[in-house]
Amino acid sequence: MKIYCKNTQTYVSVIGGEKVIDIIPRLRKELPFTPICAMVNNKTEDLCFPLFSPKQVEFLPASDPLGRRVYVRSLCMMLYKAVLDVLPHTTLSIEHSMSSGHYCRILRDGVPVKIDENTARMLLDTLQRLSDSDIPFRRKEHLTKDVIEVFRRQGLDEKVTLLESLHELYTKYYRLGDTADSYYGPLAPSTGFIREFDIRPYKDGFLLFAFSPEKTDETLRQKPPQEKMYKAFTDQLLFNRVIQVKNVGDLNMAVKNCRTAELINAAEAMHDKLLGRISDEIADRRKEGGAGIVMLAGPSSSGKTTTAKRLGIQLMTNLIVPKLISLDDYFVDRDRTPRDETGDYDYESLYALDLERLNSDLSRLLRGEEINLPTYSFEFGKRIERERPLRLEQNEILLMEGIHGLNPELTRAINPDKIFKVYASALTTLKIDNHNWISTSDNRLLRRIVRDHKYRHISAIDTIRRWPSVRRGEEKWIFPFSENADATFNSSLIFEIGVMKPYAEPLLREVPKDLEEYAQAYRLLRLLSCFEPIPDSQIPTTSLLREFLGGSSFHY
Image (cartoon, rainbow, N blue to C red; front, side, top):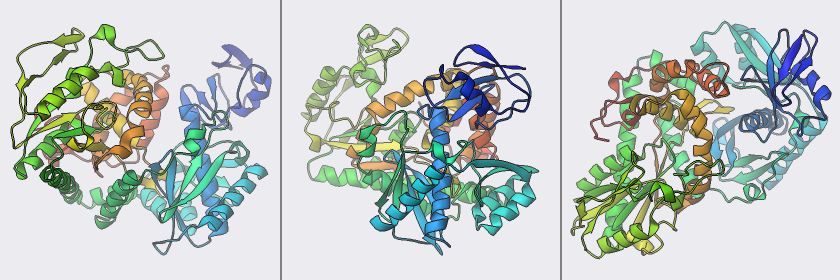
């Protein structure tokens, strides 16, 4: 029997029952890296995957985006075991990603345990011993009722609730020594693959960092904590506790217990309250002589357009008239647009915008002069001049939406006191369970897949294919400036993935298995499989989610 190795573009003979990891010594001279996992028929699998029939195999390093997920998941299981050893009778809660790491808390009877430098060192030493011991992660698959009992004995109650809500006959999980845990994706073959990590005390928990051994970036090691991001996450976590939905199992049970309308109404009211607070801050700043312009920025599919429109309504309640415009109209002509490393037009670049014209127009508006707004035609790839006069009256404010709004270089000629900056992003705080979080990037990708299909007739294949380029642009042009914001708006909704599930699943199932994009489609389908579907009939027409699903009362 032979498998096709995509890395070397050669066929390799295997004996039925051999594992993927057994092939590596035969290819050692041809593989320039140490694999941490493999794509088997375009699905991410662990290296212990058994081969009983011909397959296509592509080995992935820890520096690959999918390989990094494996690296981080494996480190998280090691952390769980370390916490059991160092702080028995406590609960590890991996909350969310932040500052290129993951914010974690350790709870005892629901109360955070203070993690000082000494405790952090003990956890790090235990992680290092686990890494040095090279203990295998052993994948198991048993009847779900038996796995539930295993988790119940370990006090993993949130995993029990999720499994009971899913009604699967069999469940896969992992063992590390005598410790059991479950993760929604493969792990490394053993702890010896996980060599670079760090723990730093922060607030009432700590930040866990996973550093790729193939790609050590010192800027990640030195990146300061994101204080404003932390507050936005923390406020949402408090809200989750109030409505008693901290994880997907809780959400599924709430749906089955007919609490959907209550959750939707509470979450939408929270959005209104947050935007109302931001509006009040802007009004106060104006009274002090500032905030003539509001810049609203955020990554792709963060709901910037609806956020701008709803913020505009809130400003009206403060007797301020918003004038909404988009940064997109300040694009330079296509022949002047920068190109990315692949040679494609880089519309995410700051320098795809006419910065000179923008700064001139903003300066004139703040002086009370009239300007003529430009209009950019994506069809023709150039600016079209037409009559669009604009002047700001005494009670009016400019509200501009675009991805670069927090970058000081965008408005370099404008007094910073005259600009109020708002950062909007879907900062997902709903967890699958205490050890499995939902990536904010995945949340936004699902939004974009649904929106692109509905409004732009773009397939899930093309959206997934484009996503890495979008993410690179965000990492370069958006995320480094998030802490420049005067206010942060969390655009995530606790119920939204359940609502998007019936929309996204058919689109993801259309991705053919012989394409590379199938790996991401399959992974997202696994995520969606954890959720009970939620009908969209109760979603208000003013909801931010309507920007992606359709049926909004706003004009886009």
